[in-house]
Each structure stands twice: as structure tokens, then as C-alpha cells.
Length: 215
Image (cartoon, rainbow, N blue to C red; front, side):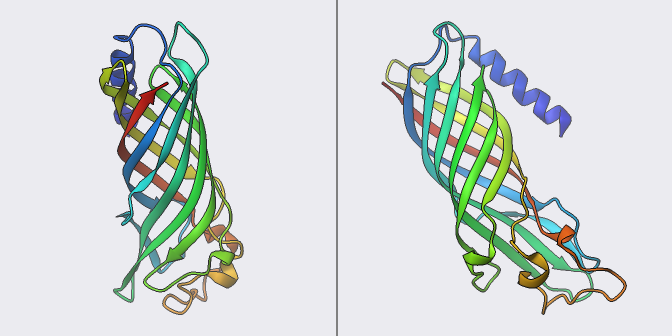
């Protein structure tokens, strides 16, 4: 993973140095696919597995330049974001695809093709094969980092490749001990204390595209 991140940073910086000056204020749509994993502790009988979000992330991106000479600025995304991961029972031989969708606002610092920032979201829907009430879910707070790599560019705008990794700073559920939807399928082990430390937090990697119109 470390070598992959270094490679992405190198490619982004190499491509950015070919463009003189900063980009103007620009905006446009984005679309990205994502894979996710519960990076928090799991109870004894459960194993977290990577899964793809069934609904791609989509929305609008806005770029605000902060310098005329260098590629320094801010990017804000507004859209729908879905996180997914699979929970597999080690003893029962069954698994569930967990899916959570949020309306999100994502401010990020941008420099030379590299981005770092946060993602804040309001839960819109959730399910694991059956519906999960959104009132049981926390507001989303996530830290993210990645690369925005332009590969087609002209005076009207540019097409960017988006590569982003994120990790939730908050647990998904307000009260995981009470509202865990898999309590019936995977009852807590009597030898293990079932606490909020098992509240899932998704780690995700997304790959997508956007087209930014220059204004």
C-alpha cells in the first residue's frame, strides 16, 4: 500500500508540472466506484471482507484556485456517497453485504494533484439485505486523501482521474450494542464483552473520473 501511494503521488506531480500556472475556478460532475472494508475490531464470530458499493458515488466538484502561479487551491465535492463491506460468519457459513449511503459535502486542500481533506455526510439509506433505519446511524465524518490526475485538458476544461482513500472517524451506529442489525444472525460470544468498540468504521478506496468546466 505504501508503494502504491508513492507511485500515485509521483504520477500526479509529474503530470501537474506539464501545465503552467493554476487552473481557473472550475466545476463539473464526478462518478466513481468504491470498495470498502470494516477497519475496526470485529466480534469473534465475524470476519470483515472487502465489498464494492453497488451504487457509484456521484455529484459535483468545485475547484477554487488559491494562487495564480502554482497548482494550489481547494476542492469541494457535493454528492451521494455509498460505503459497503461484507460481514462473514466464521461458524454459521453465511455473509451479509452491508451498505450505507450519505448525502455528503467534502472539502479538501489541493496541491499539485494531491488532495487531503474531510468528508461529512447525512445518512440517506442503509441495508444489509433488509432495511436499516437511518435514525440509528451517526452523521458521517471521514478523513480522506488521494490524487486528481488530469489526462485530457484544453481551454474549456479537463478530464481527471480520481483516486481516493478514506477512513471514517466516527462509528457508523449511534448505539452499536443495541442497534447492531446482525445481533440475531451472529449472537455475541459469551466469552467476549460486546461493547461499542466494535462499532464499524469503513476504510474505502475509490476510483473515478470527473470533467471540470473552466469559468
